[in-house]
Image 1 (cartoon, rainbow, N blue to C red):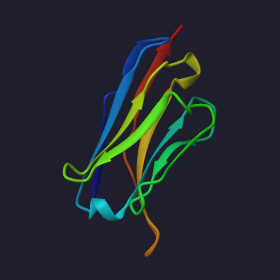
Image 2: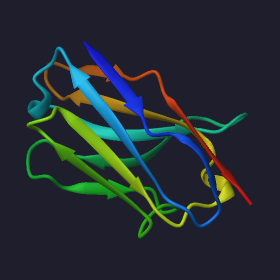
Image 3: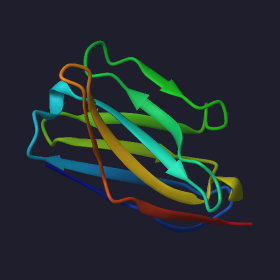
Image 4: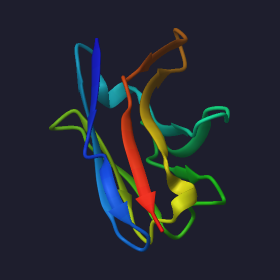
Length: 117
C-alpha cells in the first residue's frame, strides 16, 4: 500500500494550494480518507475527513470555510483544496486511509506547506 502526497509548497498569505494524495494497493473506495497536519513542536491534528460511505465530511474549526476535502474514486485520489491560507496553516500535511473493520490505517509520507506573511 502506498499513499503519495503532492502539491505542497511555499505560498503567500491569502493564497491557495491543492494537495493530492494518490493511493495504490488498496480498495480505495472502501476507505475513509482524511488529511492531518503537524506543525513544528505541535501534535499531529486532523484537518479534514471524508467518509467512504455517505460522503460526509468533517473539518477542524480552524479551516472551516477555507479548506475542502474531496475524492475521486476512479483515480484513487483524495484532494485538499486550501484557500485563504494563513501563516498558521504552515505544517507538514499527511493523508490517511482508514478502514473501520478490520481496523487498518495507512499514512502517506507528508508534504510541506509553508505560508509566508
